[in-house]
Image (cartoon, rainbow, N blue to C red; front, side, top):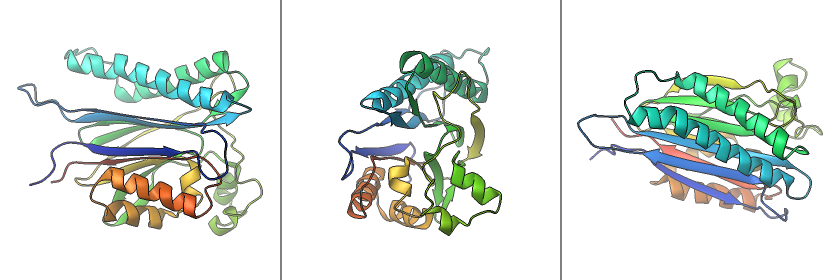
Length: 257
């Protein structure tokens, strides 16, 4: 019998070398069965903080709480109330990311954080992205990275100055040119993707993708029955391969056809 609702798993680990975990993750799912026939929906966020002492973890925690509050008040509450005068979801996502940036600049000024957030409504994903945390769309055909890293090495790849293989060991591979909390305003990548039946979404920080290729991530996710098992295995492998950074991952399984 096909699954008719979203299933998700999440895991976050300090890694093998770090003393504290500066990542923050959040997963919410809304499933209803009523005459209103509202589609399944969910909100999934990964934020990877940066900053001295505890500033990074404060920035990432603030990021997920502010973003989630904006989405709940401007998307889900009007959605549940059948409010016809709703702001388009894509506009809410962009404004929510700007609100996050304002709050981080004001409350944790010596820090920064990435932000990759996905609102799922039925078979559509609405994505807001800043930094180098990633979102992948995974099907039986493989894993596709649907976000673009806002990093120096990615820019050099796009300019044809280095190859993807060279980027893996580049001295400046961790330098970001766009991040939450860096300036008064931030440019946010906002887009939608259709989600095929039985596909998976994976959100993660660089502590995972620095160790595992897109192909490896896709194979692991599709080989486990539940998203939680896949998350736990991915974290385990990243630690076995070095675990030099915090490792955070969310896997969301879409309903089958």
